Structure formats: C-alpha cells, structure tokens
Image (cartoon, rainbow, N blue to C red):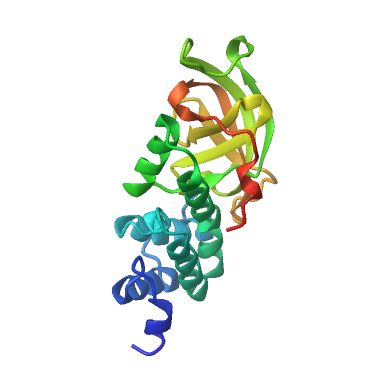
Length: 220
C-alpha cells in the first residue's frame, strides 16, 4: 500500500499494525459520541488497545532507538497518539538504564507484558502515613497526595511520580483502590491536564524506586 513502508519501519509497527491503526483513528468502533471521557480519549484508547495487543510499548526495552522509531512511526499517523506515548518511551529508557532492583524490575516486567506508563507532570502534594516512605523494615505505607498528568490517566496502567519528599520514584497503579482522577480544568473533551488524587493508597516498598534525581529531565 502506498506510503506504508516508510511508516511501518519498526519491528513494533509492521504494515498490518499501521493499517489497523489508520482504520481505528479514522473510524473508531467505540461509541465515541456517548463516552463520558470524551470522543478523542475514546479514540486514543482504542488505538492504544491495539498497540498493547502487539506489545509495541515494550519496543524501547533494551533498545532506545526502537522506542524513538516507534514514536516517529506513530507521529506519522497521529501526533497526539505519539504524544501520549512519549513519556512511556522515556520511562522505559530511564528504567532500563538504572541498576536492577525489585521495584525497577517489576515495572519493566509489567511493561514487557504490555503495560503502558507515564510520568507525572508534577507532584502537587504528597504525604506518607507516619511521615516515612516504605522501607525494608516497614514495607507498607499509606500515601495521600495529588499529581498532575499530561493525558487522561485511564490510558495508562501506571503513573510514575518523583519528588524528594516521596523518597524516590513511586509507581502508582491507576486502578488501585483509593486512586481517582478528574480534569484539571474541567474540560473532559480536551483530554489534557488531569489531576490524580490518592486518598490513603497503600504502597509496598517494592513500588518505590530509589532515585535521587527527577527522571523527567531525560529527553525522549
């Protein structure tokens, strides 16, 4: 098909996947007009479901160049779809470069099985119960807080948030009990700038990656 070879230039996105994504983006099967999250979010969700099926999100593990090629291929199809996955690719690169550890390995393992992750844009508030992060001695702690996310949080399995007061990079499962979200500006249709609220969410020490710098400083 004309134009397909240039777009389908990565292992993650073969010609069949490119054709499928084009069909989804042009004519999504979801009832976008009635979806409470908004038409564009529903459209992106369906495209991401396909990418998860072909495990495209795992492309950057062990190969940063593959992640960059994935973003370039997606950008040729839909700029916003590529933008939704930009921090995912950066997160994979950052995590892959860290020393192995249980928390880091767990997140990368989930990504390898198809999970999608993003970085929090900012941490607006965070506090640990008893004032301390999880540790080997006290592995379970509850947290309350608010973090900002660039895109609809439900598109991702995990939000990664960093702040000195957190004690490192925390992996927040988006569907864990006590996690909720809402549009930062009240505009559901826009699909940008969301606030994730944590109301006494339980974390294990294995959810916390010890990191003394902000990983969002890495460029995707």
